[in-house]
Length: 271
Image 1: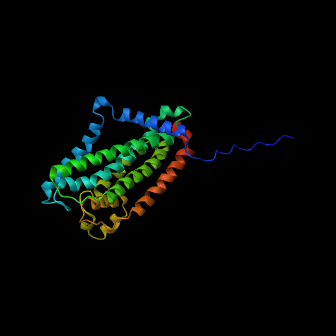
Image 2: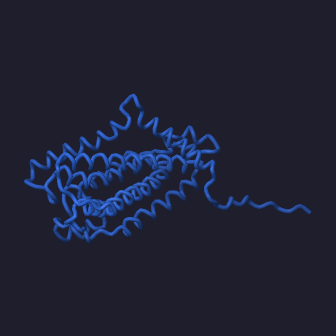
Image 3: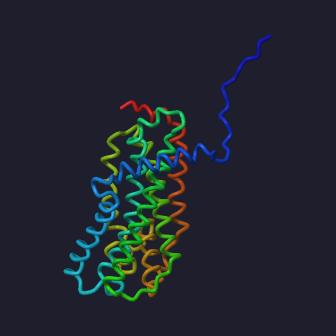
């Protein structure tokens, strides 16, 4: 009497194998050579873009206001708001397009969509940390501004910004597989965040009830925490990193689950 064979059970999840790390390392190296080619300036152009943005906005800021809301340097004030925001946007845009631009590699059994996402996220995070270090060091040295740096709040802001961007990017990866126009809609829908995240002002300057609404924007918490690490006199008591992490964890977990579940759609999209 033959025994009926049921559906194959998925293999239990275990610790990452050596092959997994080899694949991630190879993908990071490939991403570095394609995203930052030597012929086009590579890392120099990646650093020049935020530097130019900070300089232009700071000059415009100084023409409108006599002094920044914190400190005495418009460059430093704007940079402390823009850099965590740039970490977030770079992570979102990079992660959500990782599968699309590495789709030919997904034909190999050893490479999965999650591998391409993790590899790009690692490269973007390391690049943004380098950019932040260079820009803040240059501004503080050039402006001769006395600061009382606290590395802990700065690290919390940058790590949380990367985590938040990674979560949104994972979710967008799956949405793009079913709604291709989402790649164009996302920048339009999130464009107001540049104004609503407190890059150009401090949270305390916003009058109620708008201040209460602004609190629910996790990016505002990141900007406030970053500035509390640079400007010692600014405590940013209202920021809550647990709220930011919780806000990011849901789309990240759901996004990674859907990436694994719809692996075949990501590899061979219908559109």
